[in-house]
Length: 532
Image 1 (cartoon, rainbow, N blue to C red):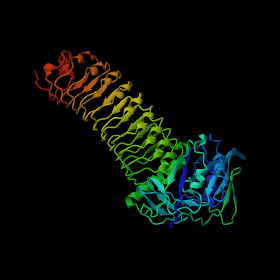
Image 2: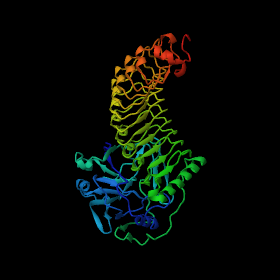
Image 3: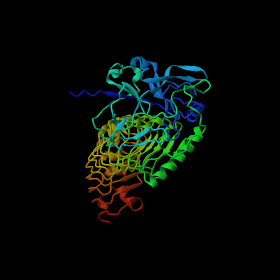
Image 4: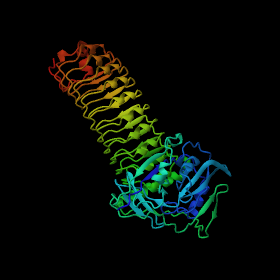
């Protein structure tokens, strides 16, 4: 009888801007070949002590430190629940301000390392320098083969625990609120199409070490951890790239390295228009990065590591081939501007609602057919652009975005608007043109700050009198509808400067008198019936 496969869980919460290592520690890691100079993988088979720049405000039980290696941190609260892990993990110390030990925190390095694999956009390569395997996928969903130990570490410094250890954890504890838990399938045949990958990092040159945080000196446990004193600048090779794609990748790597050397001054990175199909992984170590432009490339996905750029306030990914966004996008708590124009997005992850600082969201020209209800949490939004999608309806939660000043829904498949649209009382520009609207909710009359209303290209047979309550209205577009007349209450809109009427069945003589007297100067008469 075939043995039942064990279940494993991934525990992940890497917050890379939690703290930073001293640059001296990073230098020693490089020079002592404790990090592969070709691919950046950690080569250790022993514990690491690290020195931090300052004491971090640690509130979670599992996180990481920024820097070359992305070493994981684990709190005693979690260690106590897991029990004795010394057979599976190397634990090191965390220090700050010279010899001071950061209470209750430890570094962890897996005695066994595993690759978490996925089925979408999956590919891998081997580092010829260290023997390690670099694996890329959009959705990390399974392990293959099954781990031989109950606790191990993923290549992203996340814990992998089996069912027995997982059952001991108190997931309701407040300290767990930032930890993401994901169950990992272990299939009989890997669904990514690849045969078995090497699951160990070949530690050729470093067989155990400690970085002393007080003076940042390496204490060698084996004599063969010799200093090479240089950092290789070889470009990473990936056979899947065409020559032009490799050139683009190389150029991106140069720009990333320049930003890294700039340190705190390297807050802006422009990788637009290079033709990138993937991103160099060293980009995720730019903890000071505030603006990232990836526009006009050929990216079909973003890796989960996007969530590590915690300082990012502006992210432009327009003009790519994105099919989806990783849930980790929700970790960009400082993000205020997100441009996803002209991609292939069909839906947004629920985690988009975690972007509490987001004020501008551009999603025009995608394939969105629905919005997540969590969009209601984006209460800082002032600009939401959704034109050129395939939305059949507008969710009622849109009414929670009370700071919206511009809402563009043009070119969708809307047949109606929710009554909650009337809650958007800060709205000044509202475009719902080129849909299939046959009517409007009376609550539209509550939009007292509205200056531009575009209803063109719908199936409206009349304009509600409530529209005439919009005292701030300056421009009204109702072209290409089924209108025979306009309500006389339009005379009351003293601030109206432009009205677009063409493509209807309105006769000039039927226009309200005030509009008739100004029509030759202020209004587009193209297509109106009866010119006298």
